[in-house]
Structure formats: structure tokens, C-alpha cells
Length: 66
Image (cartoon, rainbow, N blue to C red; front, side):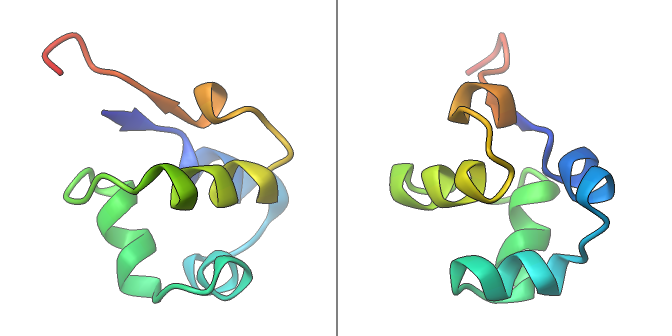
């Protein structure tokens, strides 16, 4: 699964820690999601999308190999 979290954070000019605080997870969790080492739950994906005011499908995309 690919994601645009790093890009969306840059657009809003927020850090991993800022995003983590907004959705009540650790900065390490955000780093793991951005690095594709961790696939977030549906609830967490929805919280992330809400921060960016975008649909989940604009933040997360299935890879052809998924």
C-alpha cells in the first residue's frame, strides 16, 4: 500500500509529531506508515484522511502487488 502522507504533511507544513498528536498516536507510528512498514487500521486511515480533509482513497492507494 502506498500513501501520500509525507506529501500532504508538506502541503500543510506539519511534522510527523504534529500529525501524531492530532490523531493520538506516536510519531514512530506515523514514520512507520509513511515508510510502508505498517499498514494502518481503517479507523486510523480515516483519522489521517480527516486531518488532510481528503477522502481515504486520496491518501492511501493499493499497490499492484497488494
